[in-house]
Image (cartoon, rainbow, N blue to C red; front, top):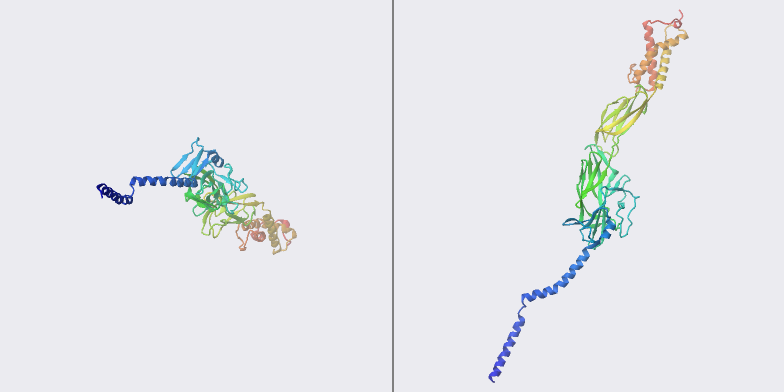
Length: 458
């Protein structure tokens, strides 16, 4: 083997040994990073693009004006804050949890079942129309208000939602609570999707938060509500107020808020007189029963004060509870109607009327009694009398009969008859008769002058 041949053989063996080693070494870091970036970037970009299309939507200004109206400024509510949409913007991108917001007015409007409603299933709504809430059957007294707020958002599937909040005042107003001496009531608050009114409960990605407060004293509890879904399951709040009031509802997008009028329902107690027509001039009395209205608990108590346009009421202040009522008495006055009013904490809560009439029945009963008393005196005389002396016996006893009858009418039992109702007409006849008879007999014993025509024969 020549020298040239040996050199070639060594070189061949060296290359054969070095080649596997070179293939077994890892690639450099720079080449790894570069190849990875080239492989990842197109896939990542595609996934991010698909994600953005799935969770966000671009709303044109025309569409926003169509469903939200154009009377007020358009705002965007995001987690980072609230901003106004520029007048020159032609479209706005909204993601789940973000809202396009618009306020239509400052005062909530009451709605009824007969009001014009948004069509079900249509892709648009009329922002100037206040749709009626899809609440379950409520009492006819419930007052329903559509709040002038509109929120537009999209769900995780990119479906548009237009949310309208509602305020339902149960009972139509606040009722008086005698224990706290305040008016109290309950209200319901919720939102509905006006684009898809047939949809079931839809959970919102971001809840709608509202602050509630009264403007004329009192309070609302809880003072903040967070509505996290759309459905018939409304949240409830309790309102307490010293009188009729206004509830201000505000959100992060509208700090000035909107206003809902809250009326009060005056408490009315029952006042029932035993007699509505009385003999006038103080000759008769009647009792008036006073009870608290139905629905008040047995532990409720209230002090009731009375006033009258005629004779005073006795007693003029009573305590009434939900368990039992009270009774007051009023006497007749001059002929005419007398109005009796009841007050709790200075607020009128009831009234009734009692009519006083001319005491014709009293006078007739008294006259009958006087005639009977005079006749009894005439018949019971020791000496025989002429018939024409009968009028004199009647005249003698007339003043006494009248006094006795008046005493019986006002409740005095001068003759100690112990009648259950001395003012009743039969009782007046008996009382006047006894008074006339005793008066005529008293005069006879006194030896007073007797007219010649009334003297008996010797």
